[in-house]
Image 1 (tube, rainbow, N blue to C red):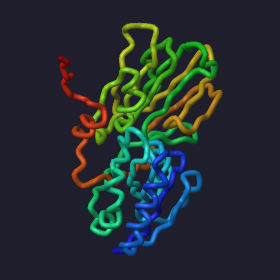
Image 2 (tube, one colour; image 1 turned 90 degrees about the horizontal axis):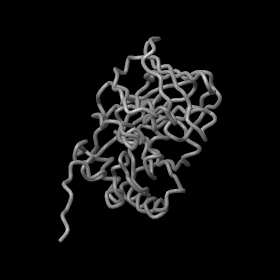
Image 3 (spheres, rainbow, N blue to C red; image 1 turned 135 degrees about the horizontal axis):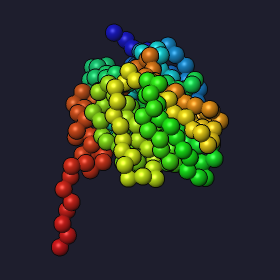
Image 4 (cartoon, helix red, strand yellow; image 1 turned 135 degrees about the vertical axis):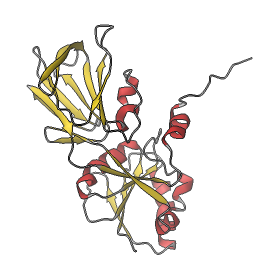
Length: 264
Protein backbone atom coordinates (compact mmCIF):
# COMPACT_ATOMS: atom_id res chain seq x y z
CA UNK A 1 0.00 0.00 0.00
CA UNK A 2 1.34 3.42 -0.96
CA UNK A 3 1.93 5.59 2.07
CA UNK A 4 1.43 9.33 2.21
CA UNK A 5 4.76 10.54 3.55
CA UNK A 6 5.95 13.78 5.15
CA UNK A 7 9.58 14.67 5.75
CA UNK A 8 9.88 17.16 8.61
CA UNK A 9 12.98 19.34 8.59
CA UNK A 10 14.70 21.09 11.47
CA UNK A 11 17.17 23.32 9.69
CA UNK A 12 18.79 24.31 12.99
CA UNK A 13 20.43 20.87 13.19
CA UNK A 14 23.88 21.18 11.59
CA UNK A 15 23.79 18.06 9.39
CA UNK A 16 20.22 18.48 8.16
CA UNK A 17 20.95 19.80 4.68
CA UNK A 18 23.26 16.98 3.61
CA UNK A 19 20.91 14.33 5.03
CA UNK A 20 17.90 15.90 3.32
CA UNK A 21 19.63 15.71 -0.05
CA UNK A 22 20.37 12.02 0.49
CA UNK A 23 16.77 11.37 1.56
CA UNK A 24 15.26 13.25 -1.38
CA UNK A 25 17.50 11.47 -3.86
CA UNK A 26 16.62 8.04 -2.47
CA UNK A 27 12.89 8.70 -2.22
CA UNK A 28 12.83 10.04 -5.79
CA UNK A 29 14.79 6.99 -6.97
CA UNK A 30 12.20 4.70 -5.36
CA UNK A 31 9.28 6.66 -6.79
CA UNK A 32 7.98 7.64 -3.35
CA UNK A 33 6.14 10.96 -3.22
CA UNK A 34 6.48 13.13 -0.13
CA UNK A 35 5.87 16.59 1.29
CA UNK A 36 8.64 18.61 2.92
CA UNK A 37 7.45 20.32 6.10
CA UNK A 38 9.24 22.76 8.39
CA UNK A 39 9.24 21.76 12.06
CA UNK A 40 7.48 25.05 12.88
CA UNK A 41 4.75 24.52 10.28
CA UNK A 42 3.40 20.98 10.71
CA UNK A 43 0.15 19.71 9.22
CA UNK A 44 -1.93 16.55 9.32
CA UNK A 45 -2.84 14.00 6.66
CA UNK A 46 0.05 11.51 6.50
CA UNK A 47 0.56 7.80 7.10
CA UNK A 48 4.18 8.23 8.20
CA UNK A 49 6.32 11.21 9.21
CA UNK A 50 10.12 11.23 9.00
CA UNK A 51 11.52 13.83 11.41
CA UNK A 52 15.03 14.94 10.40
CA UNK A 53 17.00 16.58 13.21
CA UNK A 54 17.73 15.60 16.79
CA UNK A 55 15.56 14.22 19.57
CA UNK A 56 13.96 17.65 19.99
CA UNK A 57 12.59 17.38 16.45
CA UNK A 58 11.13 13.96 17.24
CA UNK A 59 9.58 15.27 20.47
CA UNK A 60 7.90 18.23 18.79
CA UNK A 61 6.68 16.13 15.86
CA UNK A 62 5.38 13.40 18.18
CA UNK A 63 3.40 15.85 20.29
CA UNK A 64 1.72 17.21 17.16
CA UNK A 65 0.99 13.88 15.48
CA UNK A 66 -0.06 11.88 18.57
CA UNK A 67 -3.70 12.94 18.29
CA UNK A 68 -3.73 11.74 14.66
CA UNK A 69 -2.11 8.35 15.48
CA UNK A 70 0.61 9.08 12.91
CA UNK A 71 3.92 7.24 13.43
CA UNK A 72 7.05 9.42 13.59
CA UNK A 73 10.40 8.05 12.45
CA UNK A 74 13.41 9.98 13.79
CA UNK A 75 16.38 10.51 11.47
CA UNK A 76 19.36 11.73 13.43
CA UNK A 77 21.04 14.97 12.42
CA UNK A 78 21.74 16.03 15.99
CA UNK A 79 23.96 14.79 18.78
CA UNK A 80 22.69 12.01 21.05
CA UNK A 81 19.86 10.64 18.92
CA UNK A 82 18.18 8.58 21.64
CA UNK A 83 14.83 8.71 19.82
CA UNK A 84 16.11 9.45 16.32
CA UNK A 85 17.74 6.11 15.57
CA UNK A 86 17.92 6.22 11.78
CA UNK A 87 21.51 7.26 11.08
CA UNK A 88 22.85 9.32 8.19
CA UNK A 89 24.00 6.16 6.41
CA UNK A 90 20.60 4.47 6.99
CA UNK A 91 18.85 7.56 5.60
CA UNK A 92 20.44 6.89 2.22
CA UNK A 93 18.23 3.78 2.04
CA UNK A 94 15.08 5.41 3.47
CA UNK A 95 13.04 4.63 0.36
CA UNK A 96 13.81 0.93 0.70
CA UNK A 97 13.02 1.00 4.43
CA UNK A 98 9.61 2.59 3.78
CA UNK A 99 8.71 0.51 0.72
CA UNK A 100 9.60 -2.76 2.51
CA UNK A 101 8.10 -1.54 5.83
CA UNK A 102 11.43 -2.41 7.41
CA UNK A 103 10.54 -0.74 10.71
CA UNK A 104 8.30 -1.29 13.71
CA UNK A 105 5.96 1.14 15.46
CA UNK A 106 5.83 1.41 19.24
CA UNK A 107 3.35 3.40 21.31
CA UNK A 108 4.69 5.56 24.12
CA UNK A 109 2.91 7.06 27.12
CA UNK A 110 2.48 10.83 27.10
CA UNK A 111 1.49 13.33 29.82
CA UNK A 112 -0.74 16.39 29.84
CA UNK A 113 -0.82 19.54 31.94
CA UNK A 114 -2.86 22.68 31.36
CA UNK A 115 -2.99 23.02 27.54
CA UNK A 116 0.33 21.22 27.04
CA UNK A 117 1.33 17.64 26.28
CA UNK A 118 4.74 16.00 26.77
CA UNK A 119 6.43 12.85 25.55
CA UNK A 120 9.52 13.23 27.75
CA UNK A 121 8.63 15.30 30.79
CA UNK A 122 7.11 18.27 32.50
CA UNK A 123 9.40 20.46 34.59
CA UNK A 124 7.82 22.61 37.30
CA UNK A 125 9.76 25.51 38.80
CA UNK A 126 9.01 28.58 40.85
CA UNK A 127 8.52 31.66 38.71
CA UNK A 128 11.35 33.31 40.67
CA UNK A 129 13.74 30.65 39.37
CA UNK A 130 16.89 32.43 40.60
CA UNK A 131 16.22 30.82 43.99
CA UNK A 132 14.80 27.60 45.38
CA UNK A 133 11.08 27.24 46.07
CA UNK A 134 8.92 25.21 48.42
CA UNK A 135 6.79 22.66 46.59
CA UNK A 136 3.87 20.60 47.91
CA UNK A 137 3.38 17.32 46.05
CA UNK A 138 -0.11 15.75 46.03
CA UNK A 139 -1.05 12.43 44.44
CA UNK A 140 -4.76 11.70 44.05
CA UNK A 141 -5.50 14.68 46.33
CA UNK A 142 -3.34 13.32 49.17
CA UNK A 143 -0.26 15.21 50.37
CA UNK A 144 2.80 13.07 49.67
CA UNK A 145 5.78 15.33 50.33
CA UNK A 146 7.09 18.84 50.73
CA UNK A 147 10.27 19.82 48.90
CA UNK A 148 12.57 22.80 49.08
CA UNK A 149 14.17 22.44 45.68
CA UNK A 150 15.01 24.06 42.35
CA UNK A 151 12.05 22.30 40.78
CA UNK A 152 10.28 19.00 40.17
CA UNK A 153 10.43 16.80 37.07
CA UNK A 154 7.51 14.55 36.18
CA UNK A 155 8.65 12.21 33.42
CA UNK A 156 7.34 9.39 31.31
CA UNK A 157 9.40 6.20 30.97
CA UNK A 158 10.57 7.60 27.61
CA UNK A 159 11.74 10.76 29.39
CA UNK A 160 13.37 8.88 32.26
CA UNK A 161 16.64 8.84 30.27
CA UNK A 162 16.54 12.62 29.74
CA UNK A 163 16.47 15.43 32.36
CA UNK A 164 15.19 13.07 35.06
CA UNK A 165 18.23 10.82 34.71
CA UNK A 166 20.57 13.83 34.98
CA UNK A 167 18.76 14.85 38.18
CA UNK A 168 19.30 11.43 39.77
CA UNK A 169 16.14 9.63 38.67
CA UNK A 170 15.90 5.97 37.62
CA UNK A 171 15.96 4.51 34.13
CA UNK A 172 12.49 3.08 33.43
CA UNK A 173 11.72 0.63 30.63
CA UNK A 174 9.91 2.77 28.03
CA UNK A 175 6.80 0.60 27.63
CA UNK A 176 5.89 0.55 31.32
CA UNK A 177 2.75 2.42 32.38
CA UNK A 178 4.35 4.69 34.96
CA UNK A 179 5.40 8.22 35.81
CA UNK A 180 8.64 9.28 37.46
CA UNK A 181 8.72 12.19 39.94
CA UNK A 182 12.20 13.62 40.50
CA UNK A 183 13.00 16.64 42.71
CA UNK A 184 15.75 18.89 41.31
CA UNK A 185 18.53 19.68 43.80
CA UNK A 186 16.31 19.17 46.85
CA UNK A 187 17.63 20.57 50.15
CA UNK A 188 17.34 17.27 52.00
CA UNK A 189 19.04 13.90 51.75
CA UNK A 190 15.71 12.07 52.19
CA UNK A 191 14.12 13.39 48.97
CA UNK A 192 14.21 10.48 46.53
CA UNK A 193 12.56 9.92 43.15
CA UNK A 194 9.15 8.25 43.06
CA UNK A 195 7.82 5.88 40.41
CA UNK A 196 4.00 5.82 40.40
CA UNK A 197 1.31 4.28 38.17
CA UNK A 198 0.39 6.24 35.07
CA UNK A 199 -3.23 6.43 36.28
CA UNK A 200 -2.35 8.73 39.20
CA UNK A 201 -3.20 12.44 39.28
CA UNK A 202 -0.24 14.57 40.32
CA UNK A 203 -0.73 18.11 41.65
CA UNK A 204 2.15 20.43 42.54
CA UNK A 205 1.57 23.58 44.55
CA UNK A 206 3.74 26.21 46.21
CA UNK A 207 2.95 28.39 49.20
CA UNK A 208 5.78 30.81 48.37
CA UNK A 209 5.68 31.42 44.63
CA UNK A 210 3.63 31.04 41.48
CA UNK A 211 4.76 28.21 39.22
CA UNK A 212 6.02 27.78 35.67
CA UNK A 213 5.63 24.48 33.80
CA UNK A 214 7.51 23.49 30.64
CA UNK A 215 6.80 20.57 28.30
CA UNK A 216 9.78 18.68 26.86
CA UNK A 217 11.84 21.85 27.38
CA UNK A 218 10.09 23.39 24.37
CA UNK A 219 6.74 24.89 25.43
CA UNK A 220 5.95 26.77 28.60
CA UNK A 221 3.10 28.22 30.67
CA UNK A 222 3.97 30.67 33.45
CA UNK A 223 2.63 32.01 36.71
CA UNK A 224 0.26 29.21 37.69
CA UNK A 225 -1.15 28.76 41.19
CA UNK A 226 -0.84 24.99 40.87
CA UNK A 227 0.10 22.43 38.23
CA UNK A 228 -1.89 19.25 37.54
CA UNK A 229 -0.19 16.45 35.56
CA UNK A 230 -1.94 13.31 34.28
CA UNK A 231 -1.52 10.82 31.49
CA UNK A 232 -2.54 12.12 28.08
CA UNK A 233 -5.44 10.47 26.30
CA UNK A 234 -3.28 10.06 23.18
CA UNK A 235 -0.11 8.02 22.72
CA UNK A 236 2.94 8.91 20.68
CA UNK A 237 3.72 6.43 17.93
CA UNK A 238 7.42 6.08 17.21
CA UNK A 239 8.81 4.16 14.23
CA UNK A 240 12.09 2.38 15.02
CA UNK A 241 14.41 0.11 13.02
CA UNK A 242 13.16 -3.48 13.09
CA UNK A 243 16.16 -4.57 15.16
CA UNK A 244 15.50 -1.89 17.81
CA UNK A 245 16.10 -3.00 21.39
CA UNK A 246 16.10 -0.63 24.37
CA UNK A 247 19.07 -2.09 26.25
CA UNK A 248 21.69 -1.89 23.45
CA UNK A 249 20.55 1.73 22.89
CA UNK A 250 21.34 2.46 26.55
CA UNK A 251 24.80 0.95 26.11
CA UNK A 252 25.56 2.64 22.81
CA UNK A 253 24.11 6.09 23.54
CA UNK A 254 24.77 6.48 27.28
CA UNK A 255 27.59 3.96 27.88
CA UNK A 256 25.24 2.40 30.45
CA UNK A 257 26.58 -0.83 31.90
CA UNK A 258 29.93 -0.42 30.18
CA UNK A 259 32.94 -1.16 32.40
CA UNK A 260 35.53 1.64 32.69
CA UNK A 261 38.60 1.11 30.56
CA UNK A 262 41.78 0.95 32.60
CA UNK A 263 44.71 3.03 31.44
CA UNK A 264 48.28 1.95 31.48
